[in-house]
Amino acid sequence: MKTKAFSGRLAAWALSALALSACSQQQGGAEGDKGAAAGTKGVAAGDKGAAGDKGGKAGGAKIALLLPESKTARYESKDRPFFEAKVKALCPDCQILASNANQDASQQQAQAEAALTNGASVLVLDAVDSASAAVIANKAKAQKVPVIAYDRLVPGTDAIDYYVSFDNEAVGRLQGESLLKALGNKPTARVVMINGAATDNNGLTFKKGAHSALDGKVQVVKEYDTPDWSPDKAQDQMTQALTALNNQVDGVYAANDGTAGGAIAAMKAAGIKPLPPVTGQDAELAAVQRILLGEQYMTVYKAIKPQAEAAAVIAYHLATGKPVPTDITGGKTVNNGTKEVPSVLLVPLAVTKENLKDTVIADAFWTQEQICTAQYAEACKAAGL
Ligand code: BGC
Image 1 (spheres, rainbow, N blue to C red):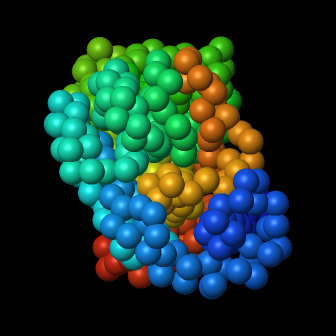
Image 2: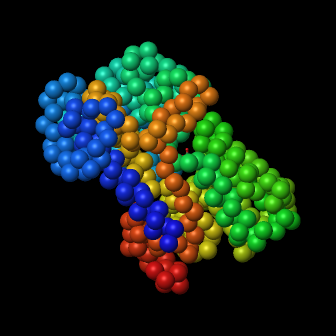
Image 3: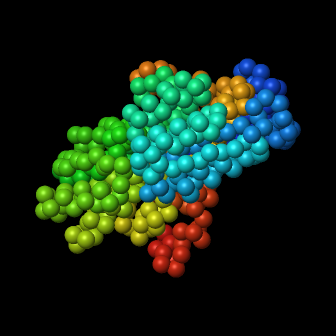
């Protein structure tokens, strides 16, 4: 029930974002864009208006998309294609300068500088490292180029114009609460925490949310931050924990599906059977399949399409000098320690075997065919898929 409402809300939001963007194109971006109804009617015309827009910077405006890494599947398989498709739909003449820094902060700095040199009129920045990202944002600001913090907030700079993400503390809370449930709320349960990267503001926020659910309710017997979110480093950390704990582990908090995969590989190598409940995030295909096999307990589903599309709508308006429709943030802001950043924050959802069908599959994030390949046919059948 709840999941249907969730999908419905997302769809409604995505539609209204589309309508609003069309509305502002049509009206030349009149402040406020109050007319949601008029905007809905004007979608087709508005989109045409964007395509045919020869004036101003619209023709050939350059939009830089700076992604952080490729060990996590989402960036190249979801974020980038959804973002590109939305920009192309709004502005066929716009050019997207997309890059991936492969976990390397200095590479991201070089990619951002190249984008600025090549005439990018907006940066959509998914930061590898908070501190270096602040330097990038300040450079962009000095050149009057606005910056959208995409997925990861960049603290400590006033050069961030928008933030488009999920409620990341809620992500950590959902993970912690699911783990508690799987452990049967047992205060003596021994939990290993494999957090994300401490250089990513999200890594810290997920950790805060998870602790708010777990502290005092279980024993956190080992805890690690995972440099660069690397699954292989997570695996090493889990191996260390198992050695130190004599394999006595009742549950594993893993901050995302990549680190969950690393932790599970370490436990399998140590011969642990049955595997204890393990959390995750991203609804990666491999994780969804592990959930069906009973190797991973849960993941957090974040519908990336509305996230990428919201960033594309904002980027398009900024790049072409049009006012960003105010309704896209609905007045919401997030404080990055320096300023209140206008923000789009989407709602994450906990996913286990029980609601896989109503969430990930219902949204076509992955189709049943993609999930239930020959190797998983039996597990799919048992789960009613
Ligand atoms: C993102 C997660 C992702 C992780 C590793 C976080 O900032 O929110 O979705 O799994 O980075 O790339």
